[in-house]
Image 1 (cartoon, rainbow, N blue to C red):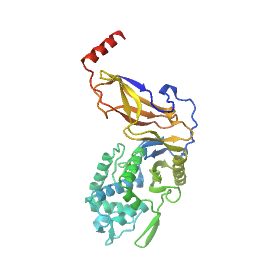
Image 2 (tube, one colour):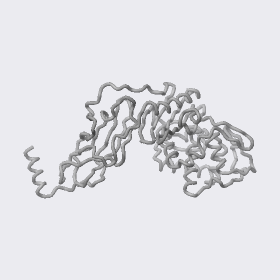
Image 3 (cartoon, rainbow, N blue to C red):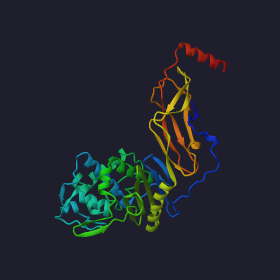
Image 4 (cartoon, rainbow, N blue to C red):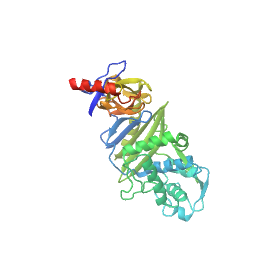
Length: 385
């Protein structure tokens, strides 16, 4: 079978892959050259708006704690952990981590709730809280990181591995990619929105009489900004996984490997503003709307209608006519039998200079194998063609 391009059944004229306009008024990227790794994802559509070295692995530093939070959220959601439960801090739970780096200033003998531990992790990047929570829940740090890595596999984080609960240097055993972090951020906000709102986006916290500020640079500074987590070590540079929500639209951003914290912070804010200002969410296709036809081989019909399994909403760059950059591709002709709902084609939105966005298309109708009479007719047509 060969790759085929189908015509689009849309009101506005569509163009095939060979007829894309040569010039597009592309909005300037908000990411300076000093940022080696950057990613902007519209999680409402699943669309990547900007990508720079998105699959390059790096050390995430304290952004590792986002996976610790996700793992705790999952356990809370499953009823295996209560945010209201209290933990007595023992020497064994705190061993090796008393006031080590960013800290909640935990002391042996303290009684602390899981909620305060999580707020310490998400708000002031507390290394001791991450370790205490992991050891308490899983019995050991190895047991906790096993849970973190199991969750990473379930989320499809192919370029990630976690060797610590807090991102402390471990000779490169902990690593991730921007694409994986964006997926983790999307899962955190979409799967556990109530817990996310409860524990992220706080400007600071007070515990044991010590007040500390959150270094996250979106909340209260960018419209819709609500978290997530900064990270820094000399080895990793400055890293950030961030999120903002305006209305029903959520943007997740990642920056990594930035030498200067001020560059990271200003770039993060610019990326969020750019994602909202430079793109317009546009519904291009309605669910179950016929948007094209695919040729069928050996079927009771010569063609099958293609439909979208859900509404297709795309963040369209300002000033562009979206339909000009839509194409349908499939390996065709598609061999019968075909069942309604079978994925048989792909709808591609490919504006030059922007990442390609794809959506599967399904057959609208059943197309059984041709009966004897039609097979004879098809055979004769093939003979004389």
